[in-house]
Length: 168
Image (cartoon, rainbow, N blue to C red; front, side, top):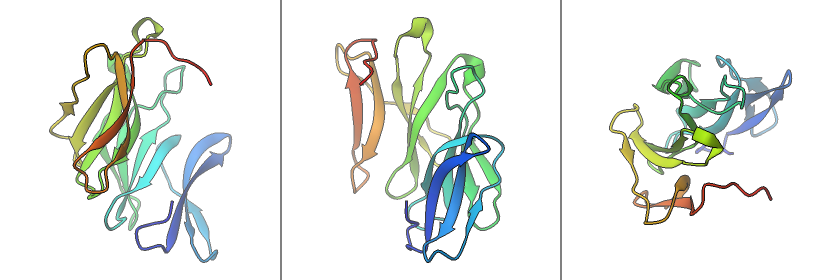
């Protein structure tokens, strides 16, 4: 993804066999790997200024499920934990995404009890506070965030009406 000013490109690729995040200069003059505490996924520039990169760790459980949500300062590489790992509490997270103004983060959280998909969409402030779980319509058993509307007033979510996962 291009940075908001178009001068840098954010990449996620394997490094040493594990997911890692890289920042490349858009003019091709260089690339560097971010110094992160572990494997990383779901990297995204913070709107509107690109001052931080939202990242999820690749998890420490046997399924490699994402858990901790954090932000990395582009200026100095300092890491700020937004939400600590949830897997110790038997929950797992994924699909973290910034709102268009960078003030909110949506993510999916599930327990994975009995191998049933039971994802609930959460929205928190950029500092990890104010957790709100979005309601689901009657009959839905899971939903996960997909994309914010351009004005940040709506969130597109994918919903399922069975606990089963269909591999495509």
